[in-house]
Amino acid sequence: MAPHQVLTLMVVGFCMFMQVQGDRCPLGFVKHNTSCYWFSTTTGSFSEALSMCRYLRSDLANITSKDEDDFLVHFELVWGKADGYFLGGSNLRQNGRWSWNGEEQEMMYTNWAPGESNLPLTQQCLVLWEDFNYQWADFYCHEPIHYICECPVL
Ligand SMILES: [Ca+2]
Image 1 (cartoon, helix red, strand yellow):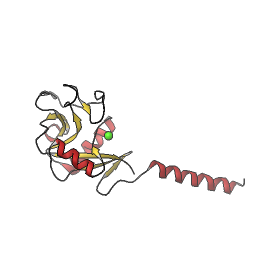
Image 2 (cartoon, protein in one colour):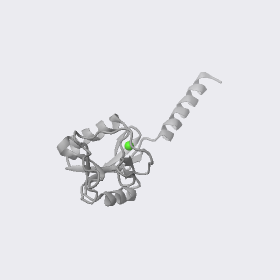
Image 3 (tube, rainbow, N blue to C red):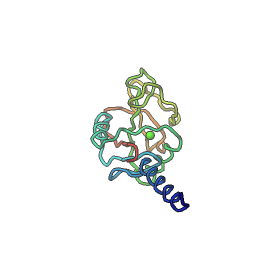
Image 4 (cartoon, rainbow, N blue to C red):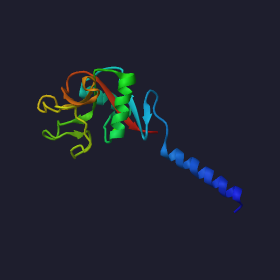
């Protein structure tokens, strides 16, 4: 095979690889690494937020690394600035243990604000709270606040 044919194959292969990887987000979503995020413009309870995310073909966001946490905090400090945001975390199913929606095990990475979570029986949903510079806090699931949806890049 001639060198230019090899080069062509490599370019085509790379383009196909990039396409498989995906690099686009739905309209209104913000991309970071392999995920897309939607910072709600309206408020809702934890269950309303989940319904809205599902309607947008996504889920309430989960935070599984410091990098992801830092990205969301930075975005909120600069662009969002709502009082608080629901994520897809709660202790509703696990009897006091905090887990992400759809996952059985207790969450590994955590970033609770100092003194949080302190009311695990009444405040059973995880939020990023402005007063704590968007570190994590427990909050009432039925109180309407903003929320963040997440889906994989397209
Ligand atoms: Ca995530």
